[in-house]
Length: 256
Image 1 (tube, rainbow, N blue to C red):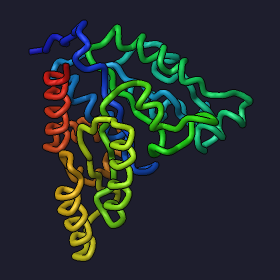
Image 2: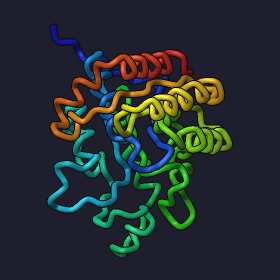
Image 3: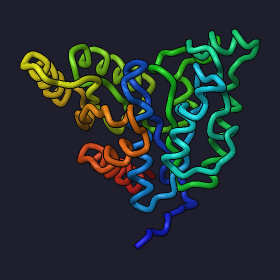
Image 4: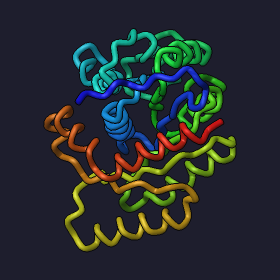
């Protein structure tokens, strides 16, 4: 039986901002899978990728913004979902300057407010890590603070994941941004004893030191690279994404 999407007009939870310890650790994968899972649970989810770089005409259909829209079944205007799209695959500040323009945080805030009026929850995916510059005076961390959203942090489960995760969590706490969870993602197959030991060490230490729920690690999913839509459906049904969806739902109930 098809579930009716839940839509609320209260301000219990404006949305969630998904950031990462670095670029290429799986923000879009985690955000899309979470959006798909929440939608399956009957929640009306809007999606937003405020700034995306490295998008050409030939790659537009595979862009992060396009994938988020498909995961949510979104028909919202692209100017609300992706207010800023740049061709050069560099930091937003440089990408905007290369096209003779600048990112205006006020434009992103207006787009977010428009989406928030239409959906019970808006999932916002960042660009790169928290200190990536988006204007001459603001970085991603400043954007999260201006949106007044709790954050989910995506990081890698292998060697190097501990330092990057703790630095990112520290930066968010310094700005007093609530952190909903740390999601660990397998970026490559874990076949050897050494790789398994490295991952186990990373996961165990972060569960002890992070001070927030640690979700995962998400299994390495080569099927996602071969067929994004089918791989995403399978990932959305995994235990880590289901747990993350429960955390988001609980956050919505508890936030005043």
